[in-house]
Amino acid sequence: MTGNRLRELLTLGNVSIKGLAEKLNMTQPNLSAQFKVQDVKSGILERICEVLGVTMDFFYGGTKYMKNGGEGYVAKEETVGVAQEEDAAILYKKRQQSLADAKDQEIIFLKGQVQALKETIQMLGGKNSNVDVPMPLQKKNA
Image (cartoon, rainbow, N blue to C red; front, side):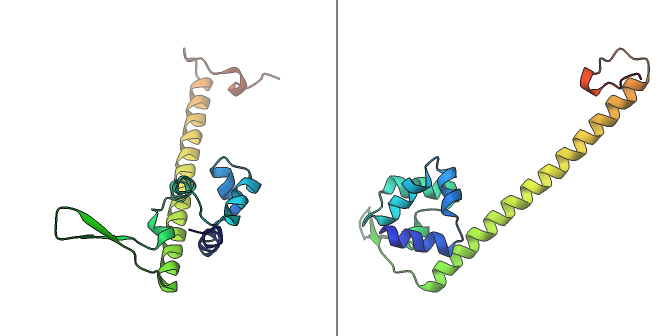
């Protein structure tokens, strides 16, 4: 895979180069250098796939494996049309959105838990109980 092709696919998937570089623990110039090579190393592609949550098929257009009549398999390369690339980009966007939605739900849940704990601490702090309330949460007597 050429670096230009890699850039095209990432752009099609609305993947920010800066954000991707951060997730890969690389500098942006280092990642950008990958777009200038004739053959992107498979190790780099694998790391990108891990971060994006896609398989190598996302970049190579789906290598199909067929039985070759014996016990082994033969790889058959198929070209990817623009429609398939767009489908991959749409699937990636949907996956990213579902991850964002899950994070939002988790944040709402955790905020509810924090509020419940605050109310419990306030309730216990108002009564004569043996529960120690941490200093920052205790009300100061004026």
